[in-house]
Length: 359
Ligand SMILES: Nc1ncnc2c1ncn2[C@@H]1O[C@H](COP(=O)(O)OP(=O)(O)OP(=O)(O)O)[C@@H](O)[C@H]1O
Ligand SMILES: [Mg+2]
Image 1 (spheres, protein in one colour):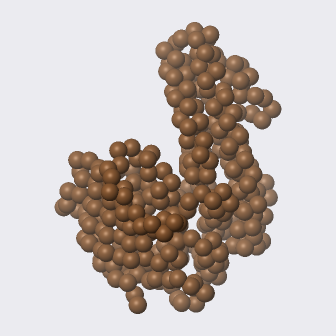
Image 2: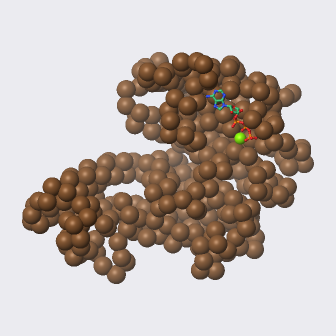
Image 3: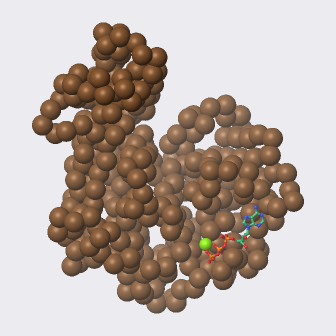
């Protein structure tokens, strides 16, 4: 699946743009503050109906305007073109897909899966466990049909258990929630573990190409100690949970760590190596999706040049090319030498919010 074209109105500094993309590589260049990240952010909106830069939903509306509008045409695997429209007004949001109004954003799941690596998303290493769990869950929502349902069941049971803890309910009443919580927790754990087991060989292959001298390891933590079951742990920590008014152990506390020689990647590797490793991780995620024939939309890589030297930039682009998916890469500038053998390539140049295709 790929994004065939996009019309942008009043999104950040982009007043209007009408663009047709390659299903291979789309390279976006321009000086600082030209609008490169803004273009990637607009594309990301089509997949996730939110930004990767801000939680303030109205922030991308161009200064002085009351709405932004994005109209994309998605080319599905079976060859059908599906229009998607997003209009964000200061007063609300309207999403249209294939001619119908989208009422629940969860109905868009799998419609146009996008992944982004921007400066901020390198928080997969430095950010808290919540970020890594979100990364994992997003991938599982796309590869595992049953995951969303089990994840919702778990979240609901956890909310109810926590409310019961806060209300100071007696222990036997709190334990009644556990019968709903525990089976969902086990399933989430099982899916996450399976997913990461499949990911590890891909991760190692990707990192071997990007960083031949770095042997990377991935360690998964379920959210409760490995030497006990969650049921036992919940029972033993019930008093503490009651005091704190929340559940201390469970899949909502899961995490995974990337390490090199037993140390966290970020303390052992240079900034450039860290960025390359995160790219490797994300490419491995794409491979997992492809293994399961899950639909893959676009891969967005903002600011290719930051922290990567020319050799590592070329390697990243080579790896992206191997995946055969639609890619959007922004960079302040790139030499043609950094783009070996991309069969389908379109270049765009951005200047003060004006985007032109370079032919
Ligand atoms: N809501 C908005 N309305 C108008 N302009 C905005 C809005 N939000 C941000 N901008 C401006 O848009 C410009 C483009 O920002 P953007 O982050 O896309 O630049 P960039 O090309 O990625 O630059 P860099 O190379 O520095 O990353 C900036 O000058 C920014 O201040
Ligand atoms: Mg930028």
